[in-house]
Length: 520
Image (cartoon, rainbow, N blue to C red):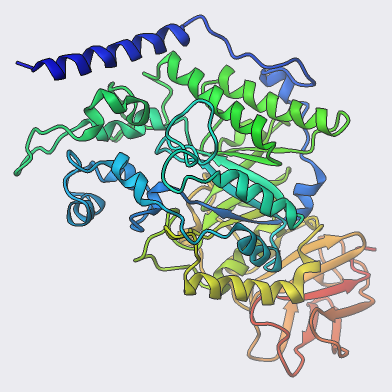
C-alpha cells in the first residue's frame, strides 16, 4: 500500500503529465516565422556555408556543465545510475547511493566559482581560435542559459549564472565568432537509467531518484528504450519518443537561437525528429538573413553526412577525420581528453593536436577542439601547456592555415589515409605524423607544403612537387620556411622538391614552406 502523501505525489505527477500531453498534442506542428528558408529538406538545400567558417579553420569548445562537478568524466549523469559502472562506484563513495543522492543533488555542487570567460577568450584568441563554442545543453537535460522552457537551468541552479550569455559576451568582445552546442534530443532515452534500481546488494530493488515523478522534467518520463543490433540501448533512435518531447526539444533550441543568435549551432547527432529539427535549422538561417540583409552568415552542423551533401548544413565528424579532401567545408570535433572534465584523463600531446589541425585543414576541414573545464571553471596546468604550445605554433604558421583552401591532394606519406568508410571515432587509429608525411594548403597563387617532422638526414622531400608530377606542378620560383628569415637551399626535379633544413627549427611541429610558382 502507499500512504496518503505518496498518493498525493502520484496524482500531482499525473496532472503534470496530463498538462504536458495537452500542451504538446499529436497534431502540433513546428511554427516559425516565414523567411528565406522553410523547414523542409528541399528548401534547406539552397544553403551555402559562409566564408568566415571556411576561413576560420580552428575553434575551441568548452564542454562544461553540472556533469563536470564530480570531475570524473563524460556521461556521468547516466552512468552513475548503472550498477557496477566506474562512475556508479565513484558516486557511491563520494556522494552516496543514487536513490538518496541523485544527479539533481549533484547540480547544486557545480558552483563555477572561478569562472572567468574574459580570461578564457583572451587565452583562446592568442592560441589562434577564430570561433568559440559554449555548451548549451548536454544529454543531462540541464540548460546553461536563461531558459524559458526548463526550470533546470544554470541561472536558477548550480552557478546561478547565464553561462551561455557570459561566454557569448566574452567571445564577441575578442572578435571571435560564437557558437553553442546542443545534445538534447537523445536525453529522452539516455536518462532512463535513472528510473532503474540496483539488482543486488543493500539497495536491491530500491528505485533511483529518477523514478520520483516530482523530477520527471529532469529525468524524463519512464518508457521503454529501443535496442540496437547488439542489444544495447539505442539512445539516438527516434522510436518511442513522445510528441511532447519532440515539441519541447524544438521550443528549447528555438529559444536558444532567439536569445543568443549563435554564429554556429552544433547538434550532437543528425537532424533529429525530421520536421522539428528542420524547422529550427531553417529558423536559425532565417534569423541570420534578417540580421545580415538577406545573407545567411551562420552555420549548423550535423553528424549525418547525407544531411550536408547538398547544401543544408556542415558535416561534423566526432573524433575522426574524413578519408580524403571533402567537397564541402566540414568539421572535426574532438577533445584533448574526455568530453567532460576527468581528473584521471590522459591528454593528447601538443604534437598530435597540431598534426590533426594541419591534416584536417588540408582536407578542407576545421578543427573544433574541446578543453574540458573543471568544476571551478579554471583550466588545469596540463591543459594550459597544450594551449601555450598551440599559441607558439600559430605565431609562426598561422598564415598557412587561415583563409586557405585545399590543393589537388591533401598530401602523402605512410600516415596519409584515414580509415576508409565511416570516419567518426577513427582518431584512435592515428599514428603521429613524421618527416615522411607531407600536407598541402593553398592561398591564392601560394602553395604551402608542410613537413610533419624534422628529417634526421637534413633534407625535406616533397615528391608531389616533382617537375613531372601527375598533379601538374609549375616551375617553382621561390621557397621560404615560415619562421626562418634566411635563404633556403632547394632544388626541384623529377624526384620532387628537395629542401635542406636550416640550422635551427622555427617551431617544434609541422614545418610550413611557402612556395611560389608551383600553382602557375
